[in-house]
Each structure stands twice: as structure tokens, then as C-alpha cells.
Length: 464
Image (cartoon, rainbow, N blue to C red; front, side, top):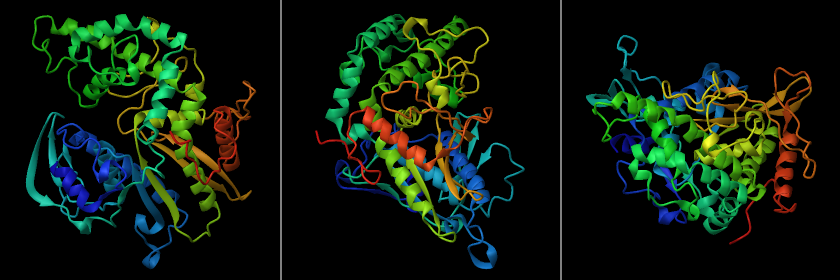
């Protein structure tokens, strides 16, 4: 809470009154909702990596006195978030890394390993093996450590594009229930019941917990189940820590058994959302609003003069939204790969798991790469790139620091209409033009039978 309060002094959240009367949706659940210190540092590191990249790529880098400038002088920074504490804190920490100056008081930063620093008014703090923190009552950074402040906007529900589930709960509930009711979903999710029962022997809190959308045959919330492995991995905590099995005589064997469930659990969760996002109406309802908003901003940026400040727009939302965006634009690693589910979720010998418990990294296997779930602090960047020789604009998509190739569907009725964009290993692949992005979104909407009257400037699903 102290860290959040300090960050809010420099990156305040402006919550529209239509959003839960101007209050966070998850308020009053402390400590739940707050990022851990490690989570805060992860997001700040991501912000610093973006600063490095876009400091180097900013064509307007000659702005400012004597040819020098700060990041916010080169870019017009805007920030938007969903109405949750964790997404707002993620945006605050990202911005802290993006625009804060190095702390002038940290002359010992290179000589003291394990010490982390943050701008935005955060007291510098120490981490002891990733488990315990002690705050140092020495130096607080001030507004002088920041180039500027940026407000984080939680917009009016009418114009917000980031969370279809909060904006249209009844419509989204009906769409998800429609997917769950299909025979194939019922059959494969039923096959995962044995996996869920085995997991509940270690995590009894999963059994009988409320399920959204009326529940499914497997009987557990798979996001909560997967979070156990991802959270413990991200914080270097033992899987059996704080459980009844910790310290038991057979703890080592039980840890091995629980560890063996990590990949099947992550895989089944990935399969469930793969089924969700093969429903055109559901996929378009989640992904079309933010994608149209980004596309509109890119068209506006394309028309700007060379010395105009270009937009740097930050959206802080949720893993399911990020995943929907990747499916909508046809991320090749998600499009390819055979489908399976339930009890068949086993690793082939020598293949990379969807989650590696040892280092917390989410991996992509070339044969089952759709078995993927966004790790903590995952980011997707849509870059508008101008090719000076042809004076043409392209869109480059970067996931967690690496450019990805796309294989979107480019025709409504032709299942073989997918085209490959941005694959470096193929001479036939080409860059995704801005017009291509607009076209694939039109295809996405027409396939969802939303209608062709929607413009790229404004998108809103029908009223409930």
C-alpha cells in the first residue's frame, strides 16, 4: 500500500464515475490486488526496456534544448487501464521505469547486488532471496527524479475498449456459455476432471470454489489453478510452501508429483481459451475495440508531420485480453499446432513445456506452441514503422521483446486465406501494412457477423 500511495502521487489514476462510482472494482481486498515488490520491479524493468528501445528509435530525438530532450519531450505519452488495482499499479510501475531519471542518491547501485531502486517517490528497498523485504528509511526519490508525470485514465464505460466483460457482462456471459455448451468442449473438459481432482488433493481450496459462466464439467477455475504454478515460479517459492504438505516426510515426492501437473494444467487452460477464441463473436467482442482504437491512432500518426510528437500509448489490461489480441491478429505460434485437451495434455519427450517451473519462463514449443499462457509482466507492442524508401507504413508486432510473425485470416469465407506476415525465415513473407491490419479487422468483424457498418474510428457492440 505504501508503494502504491507513493506512485499515485506521480502517476495518479483518474477513474471515471461510470466505473464503479469512481472506485476500483477490487478495493478493500488487501493484500490481494497489490503487486508484490518483485512484480513492481518486473514492470519497472519492462518500462526501462521500452525507454531504451524507443529512445533509440525516436526519429524526433533532436527535440529539446541543445539537441537533447527527455523521453516525454520526444513522445506524447498517454496511459489507459482497466479499473483494477493490479492493472493500475502495473501501469504506474511501467511508467516509473519509462520516464523516471536515475536516482541521484544511488551512488552505490553497482556495488550492492540485490538492491533495487525505483523512482516516483518509492523508498528504495531490499529483497532477501526474493522472500522478505525490509524498507530502508534513508532516501526517498522526489519529483526531481521524474521527467514528468502521467495520469492513468480509466475511461467512461461507453468509450472504454479494454474490458468487454465489465462493459457488457450479460452479452459476454451468453457468448462464453455458448462455447461451453458445445459437445466438443463438454467432452474434452470432462476428460480433465481427473486432472482437476488430482490437483485438488494439493490445493483443496479449488474444490467447490465459485465458477464463472455457470461452471464447467471439470469443476475448477483453471485460471486460479494455473496461477498457483506461475505465481510460485515468479517468486521462487516452493510449490508446496504454506501447505499442509510442507515439512512432511514425503515432501520431496509430493513436490515432484505436483510439479508434474504444471504443464497439463497450463495446457488445459490454454486449450479452454483457444476454444473461446475460435468463436468469432466472442473473439471480436474482446479484441476488436482495442485493435480498432490502435489502428485509428496509427492512421492519425501516419498523417503527422516529421517534427510532431508521435503518440506513445500505454494500455494496461489482462492476460485474457492480451491472448485475444494475439488470436485476432493471427499470431503464427497460436494459429499453428494440433489441438488436444483434457487428460491427453502430456509433454512429448524433449519438448518444451508451456511453463518451466524452474525459471518461470513461459516457453513456446514448435509443435504445441498454442499451449501458451502470458507470463507476469507480458507486453505486446504494436509499432508503426515508416519505410523511407517507399514512404509506406508497416506494423510490427513485438511480444515480450521479440518480433513475431503473423498468419491472419484475410477472407471471410475462405479457410485457406491466411497469409504470413513478418516471418524472417521466409522470403515470401512480407511486412504487415497498415491497410492489411485494417482489412484483417474488417474480416474479423464480418466473420463475427457484427456488421460492416462499424468504422475504424468507433466501435461498440450492440447494447444488451
